[in-house]
Image (cartoon, rainbow over all chains, first blue to last red; front, top):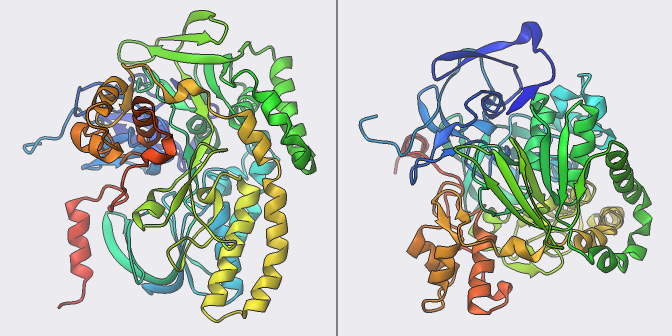
Length: 98
Length: 466
C-alpha cells in the first residue's frame, strides 16, 4: 500500500519476510518494509484472527507486532532493518507447541 | 557504563535533548533513554540520516532545524541509550530498562519524563483495517523510509499536521484523493477570540494559511465539516463512507486512509508514578499537574515537552531547560538565584511559544462524534471490545473505566489502554450522564511496556546476591 520514492542503491540490504527475500534500506524500520508488501498485513489478532497492519508507527499501538529472528511480538515500527533479518508474520494467538 | 547518574531523562525529542544539554552545562551526569534508534523524537524523526539526503529539503525548515539540535545533544556528554524501553520506576529512583532483549536497573537522583505526545485515538467503524493509519504514521514513513501511499490517499481529520503532511506529500510527488476536513462548524468563530493573544505568532499563522492555499492551488478535493467515517473492506481497506454535517453522504473506493484528530500527552508513566493529573478542558485530555519548573506532584520527577500539555517543539525546548535548571539547583550545582535568573528567558520563550495554542485548541477541538462512536466500533483494538458492549455494561451499576476493564478486558492488551482510554472514559461518562473528567482514567501500573519472562530473568542475573 506504500511505495518507496528512491532506489536504495548499493547500500540496500536483504531481509526475509516469511522466507521471501525483500530489499530494504538501512535506517528504515521493519514496519516500513512490511507496508510496501503486497499482503498488506503483519499479524492476525489473538481474539478474532482478523488481519492487522502498522497503524501509529511510533510505538504506542502495538499493531505492528511480528516475529523477528525467532523472537515473537516485536514492535516492527521500533526495529530498524538489518541485513539477513528474518521476519515472520504472526497468526492468531501463540501456542505452547510453537 | 555506570548505572548511576544525577539525572535520568526519558525521551530524545526536543524537550529531552534540550534538558540533557542544559543539565550537562551545569555539570550534572545525565543518562537519556529513548525507544527510537536515533535522537529527534517524532518531530525530528530520523533527522541525522535524512538531513544529508535530497529529500530533506521538501520536509521543510522546521524539520531541518533538528539537525543542529541532534548534533548538540550528541556532543553534550550525556549517556545516550537508544532502542531502550523504560517499563518501571521505583522510588529512589530505580528505573527498569530493557535494551536488546536484556533488562537492567539504573538509578538517578531526579527524573525528567520527556515522553511527548501521541495522536488522539479516533475510534470509528473499520479503523482497525489494514490500510487505515494515522497521518503521523504516514509522515514518519515519509521522513524515515521515503515512502508514500501507492495510490491516491484519503486524509480525514483536522489540525496542523494533516495540512503539513499533505503539502509535504505533494512536494514528494504523492497523490491525494481528497481531504475530509472534520473541523466542526463554528470552530473558526470560537477560535477567533483567542487570536489577539496569538498575533505574536503571525509566522505560524501564515505558515498554516500557506499550507491551505497550496492545497487549494493543487486542486485537492476538500469536504468540510465531516462528522462520521466508516472504513470497510475484506481483510483490508477497500471503501470509505463518510457523512458531512449537512447530511451529505458518500462512498468512495480507498486503499489507504490517514486519520488525525490532534495529539494528546503521553501520561502513562506519570500515572504509574502517582503524579497527579488534571483534565484540560481546552485540549480535551489529561495533563500532569506541574509547577513553574515542570515538577510533578512527586518530588524530583519532572515532565517536559508535549507530555506536559500540548505545546509543540518550540515550547518543548524551554520546558526541558527549565526542568534541568531546577534539577541542577536541587543537586547543588546552581544556587536558586542563579537558576531563577537563567529561567527568566526560558519562561519568556515558553509563553511566546504557547501564545497561539488556545487559538489552535479552539479551532481544532475534537468534534463531538469522535467521542461517541457507533456501537459496532472496536474501541479497544487489542482485545476487540466494541463501543456497544462498553455502553451496555456502563449502565449496569455505574462502573468506572477500571471495573469495565476487568469485566470486558478493554485496556488489557499490549497497548495498555493507549488507544482506548479516552474513548472508554467518554462512553462511560455519556452512558452515566457524568462529566468525563469525573469518570477518571485507567489505573496505570507497571510494566509500562510488555516485558518478556526472558527479559525479567536477565534482570535477576544482574542483582547483587542477597
